Length: 384
Image (tube, rainbow, N blue to C red; front, side):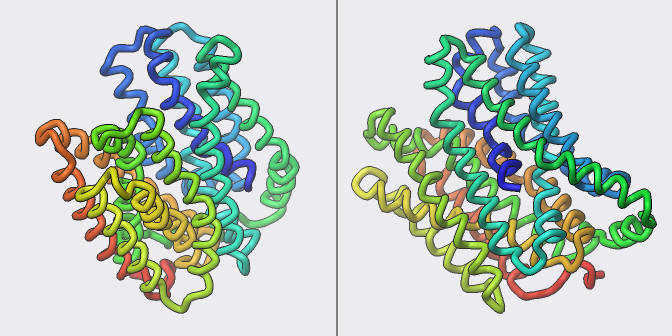
């Protein structure tokens, strides 16, 4: 699970780090580059929704093996082509693998570690965060070392291939077990769980979407905010990296806290307080206290490991977990796609950061409202 998690953002952040070189190398137009950077949220939203159907037809380990192979093959194919169109299509193949694995991991945690959901979720969320940070930080140096952006982008295919190996025996055993059992029972349970028809399901989707919206907006625009505040580009990049780096221990601790508390309300409100203080500070004094705002942002982004943990806590069964995970993440990523776009529009229209930060505060209010709904212990299988 940790090997899979390390791969879940490397293909995305390495591309972002090398986007200028890729545009020059393939002759990507501005529109095509925009499509490439938007592909992750499109894939996560659209293809993630198909995962419950896949799991009803095939065992989860088999689906995961195919997903990780798609990720590895897609990453290889996109660095050996000189065609912009093929690059986009093969990137979509790689992202399809990530989209499916995103949904499967909470289910697999519930299935294999039902009494250690918080601990294992924290571990794989930390692995995801580490993979995100390392890929973003090392893609350019690797490209420079080998003299080509293709090396900086393609090296992560090996990591994806490595993640396949431990799952192959599990996939073979799962196939044999499914042949010997009666699969319609699991399919019937999964079919009864319909998060889109429940208040809890929509609250989970809105919380996931609002926190992802803020996360993508921060990743896309925080460095620019610090540049506008007077920081050199290198310093602004380090401050942005600080948000991710400081998020590693938060990602490890948050699920454990969530699993032990009788209600999630204190965590939801604390995360809101951290983010609010960070946004207000960025609006009023972005230069003087930048390290403090970075720390508060990292704490506030603990909403991501919190919602991943909550997906497991709000379902009784593995089938319920995958249904809730698919709905919350696929719907949430549609919402998240609006974040960088609207922040960019507001920034360009106003020439400053007051309006964009105001928009992020509104999104935070929506997130908190949804968080109050999901804070109370209950299960998606009991919702009607």
